[in-house]
Amino acid sequence: MKKRTVEVPPRSARVAAAARALVGVPFRLHGRDPATGLDCIGVAALAVRGGGSDAPVPVPTGYALRSGDVGRMLKGLAAAGLEPVGDNVPGTVALVLPGPRQLHLAVLTDAGFVHADGRAKRVVERPGALPWLVLGRWRLREGEE
Image 1 (cartoon, rainbow, N blue to C red):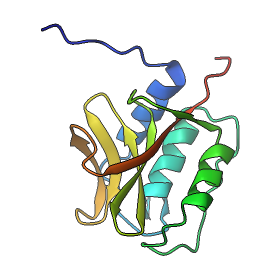
Image 2 (image 1 turned 120 degrees about the vertical axis):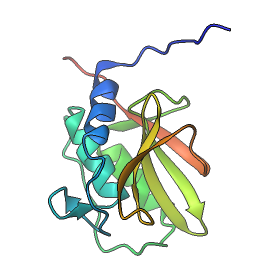
Image 3 (image 1 turned 30 degrees about the horizontal axis):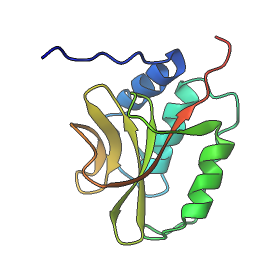
Image 4 (image 1 turned 60 degrees about the vertical axis):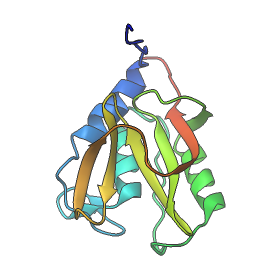
């Protein structure tokens, strides 16, 4: 069986590459700087900025690890210039539910996904599909290059 190739839009490819460049950065809750550590929101924000977001990427602060505030997350994704999609193209930001009231963001790649892993204490790329319930997927709007 021949593997189907997916065309990755240019901005999405840059988002995935920017996320991959963060692999190995330490994990830190509310972390926004790769020099000191990142959490999942920090990884997603830097990846979207690396993809060329025209909008300032708002980065919330003051949230708990288990907040479950989906509305706040949806507003932030939209304000960052991301639009809902239904596929798994690399460069897509996925909102997942790894545990009760625990929201998490991951950036899809051609091999799997990049995310800030609290257990591994660093940003990692995991192979394969997301192992959690996916609440939604968003991608940076393609604009003029």
